[in-house]
Amino acid sequence: FTLHAINWDVGSGLATVSWRDEPRGDPARAHAALARTAAAFDRYLNAVTTVATRPIEGLRMSSDPLSASYDLAARLTIPTWERQQLLEAEDAARRLALLGQLIAREHRLLVACGLIGISLDHPGPRFTLN
Image 1 (cartoon, rainbow, N blue to C red):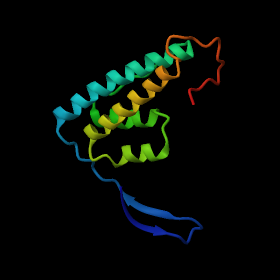
Image 2: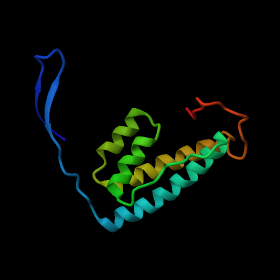
Image 3: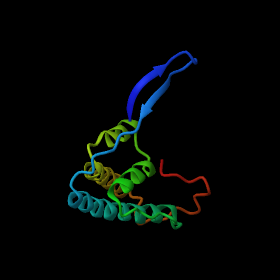
């Protein structure tokens, strides 16, 4: 978005903004990045399902690289500074490439911690990987 003005008279900042169109970039590059990132996300979800001992249902990835890049970014539990890097990516292809790296890292952490291949005995309804 573009920030046009901030009104501080209301006790906190109230901004006037306009939404900007994001550059789409090269469609072929974006779709290739989406395919790679979707495969990495599937591997990660399979690992998480193994750890949680219950299926994760209802996750459908958009075939539109722009929508998928924001959807995946919203789903990952990552530090704020990494989320900001995703927001600053110049286009969907770059955001998807960054997401692929983050997802692969999270998968490697599950493997390194020895969590893949074991099951947790009834982790309960409040189970989280964090």
